[in-house]
Image (tube, rainbow, N blue to C red; front, side):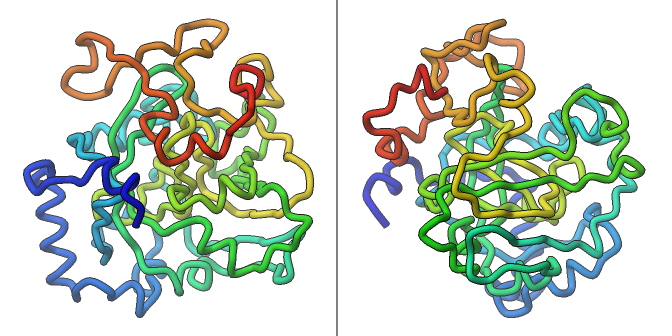
Length: 320
């Protein structure tokens, strides 16, 4: 591990909330670290809903975790942007309770040697799970700190042997208006689409998340499989992924296609580039002090030491 990652913040035992300590004990009692690596979430993924309270087995990756206190489980699961279930922050937790995440398939396509449709168990099976405590910064100028459970996106993508033509990765969310009431409204163009450059997707900070706070990912947080790119605004973190495609050209992403002057393809957190309707220079942290003093927004959401090199020579005002 490079010194840069280690210096970005090791989490001390005192930083871990009692709820996480409880879940970690549950994890060890349930079978010990490495259980999921061996069994590939088989027992968990057969459950009827991602609302299961079953614990996941994982290792804590301190070198990739910030030392800030995580938000509470209640904060994280009741204050959400997930327009497929409604546009108010409380809508996803209220409207996603009966969303079915099993069975679940993911289609792999485009510029890769191995393509096809794979069930979720096959997608997850080879990947040991780890916990990473990441900052999340929303383009609406608020932030949270979340203990995600997942595995590196790059490890997954390598399995499908992308060809030299693969310059970008396109992701799509499930389109199912019967289950996702927000898709019945023309708020956005459905299904939701996001994308990364290949070097961004292969960066070790990019995470495929399947849980948080030691539990299976709740429906309102993107179950059963979602993307976390901590140096970008939260709208890049596409949820309920059903398609991954390797492409030669940048995909037309949902928000950039809907309002290109407000939401760029790159979506890097840049305090110097304001949203047309508000400043990005400061943010409010959701939680006990949500209505307290605002704090300065950090370049690349605090991950500049790790990722700034990806954009060397680029005009980050133009490529926002």
